Each structure stands twice: as C-alpha cells, then as structure tokens.
Amino acid sequence: MDWAAFRLSVELGLWTLVLLLPLALWLGRLLAHRRFPGHGFVTAAVALPLVLPPTVLGFYLLSAFGAEAPLGQLWQGWFGRGLAFSFEGLLLASVIANLPFAVQPVQNAFAAVPPRVREAGAVSGMAPWRVFWRIELPLAWPGLATAAVLTFAHTLGEFGVVLMVGGSIPGETRTIAIAIYDRVQAFDDHAAAVMSAVLLGVSVLALGLANTLSRRVGRQRADG
Image (cartoon, rainbow, N blue to C red; front, side):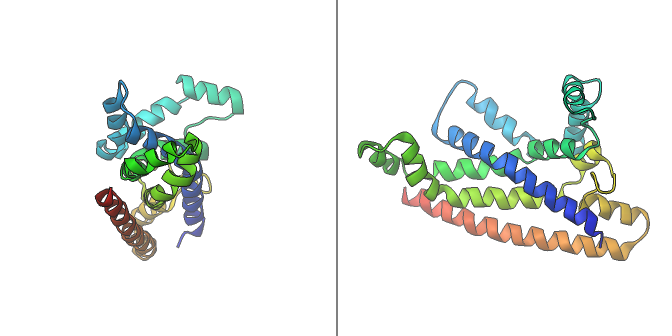
C-alpha cells in the first residue's frame, strides 16, 4: 500500500471540497431557481466533464496551465513556479473535473424545495438571506451531502485528468489511482490489488450514501 499516494489523494479530495462546495452551493441554487439568458449553456458546460473523455479534458487543462499559456504565465509571475505538474495545478484541474458531481446534486436539491415553503418565509417578512439560511439550506442538505460524497470519491479515483495535468511526481502529484497504474506497470499485482480494493470500498460506500440521500431529495420533490 502506497500510503504517501493515499494521503495525497485524501488531501486533494479535501481541498477540492473546500474550493468547490461553496461554488456548487451558489451555482446549483442559481440554476435551480432562476432562468436567465445562457442558462442552458451554463448547465451544459457544468455537465461537460461527464461526457468528455478525461484525457481530452486533461489535455486542454494542461494546455491552459502550460508556461506559454496566459494562465500559466500569470501563475508563474505570481508564485514563481509552474502550474502544470504541481499540486496546485492538480487541485485546479480536480475542481473543474468535479463540477457536475458537486453542482448537479445541489441543483436537484434546491429544485426539490417546495416553492410554497420559500414563499411562506418571504410573506412572513423574512429577509432573503434568512429564507436561504433558515429554510432552503436545511431542506437542501441531502443534496449538499451527496455532492460532498460524490466529489470526494471521484477525486480519489480520478486517473486521466490527474495523469495528464500532474503526471506521477512522488509527494506532489502521484495519487493512489496513479500509484495503482505504476504498480501494474511494475508487475506488482499484489500492491495494485490492495490499493484497488481500497478504492472499490470507498466507491461502494459513496454510492450507497449518495443513493440514500438522493431518495430523501426525491421524497421532498414528491411532497412539494
């Protein structure tokens, strides 16, 4: 078991949650409650990582993070180091690759909040932020929890984007998924099997939790 790679994967997953969940909360609620010009385009852009091959997404991100790209040059000027093949670049790529896993459950959860409940809060004189904090958020929490579970599990198992953007630098970008690939390449089937079993267990647990929470969102929508 490559514990260094496992710890790096957990760290990547936690930082991805820290950066992505606030964005998912804002964007998911916006897409659920408002119709605006470009709504369909934004929805499609959020879902794009689901259908785009990870290596293709990784290629475009690597191109954007490179030393010749504006983003890569800006990062180099600010921090004095490249964005590609770094943990920071890996984290940014993880946030982008996990957008649908975070935003879509949140969007579905807010869409399932009965409109009459929000309207009742507004009619009673509650400020919009209090309606959100005291009414919407408690009802939408299963979607937020689902987003967190799916995002974390997907981050642990992501391979294509990680390989393209981060490579396999020990202690910097070698996640457990990359470590499995390296062990297979070295014909170390035992180590690869142990690490694969860990990811399998995490995935099964994540799917079980996500399905349980999704049923709660479905019951709210039916009640609404």
